[in-house]
Image (cartoon, rainbow, N blue to C red; front, side, top):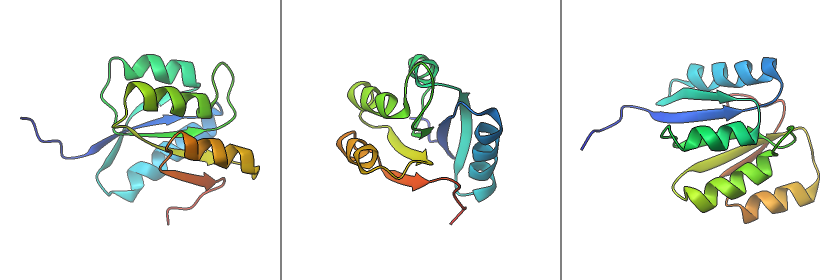
Amino acid sequence: MIKLKHFQVMVVEDEELLLKSTARHVEELDMGFRVTALCQNGAQALELLKTQPIHLIITDIQMPVMSGLELTRKAMELYPEIKSIILTGYAEFHYAQEALHNRVFEYLPKPFTSE
């Protein structure tokens, strides 16, 4: 059995600046997380999950093509071992409620800090 030295992270965000910034923050934490995939919508992320092992998805909620909520729901159904974190600028309760139904690990407001 191969033992990983890090957890592989996928960041999904439609705004390129936020995509790169989030990935940089994750890498700077230096806590065993390595960003191995960057996607700009949920559909692209779901396709990539078929070919690349991922331990954690960090995703925005509102994106074109497929939302982060839909992505987390489908990822949970297909790959139940993957954890998900949602980053959002939306404070609406129904988003948080749906995230909980999708077994999202964390629901964080944007902008977020390293803490």
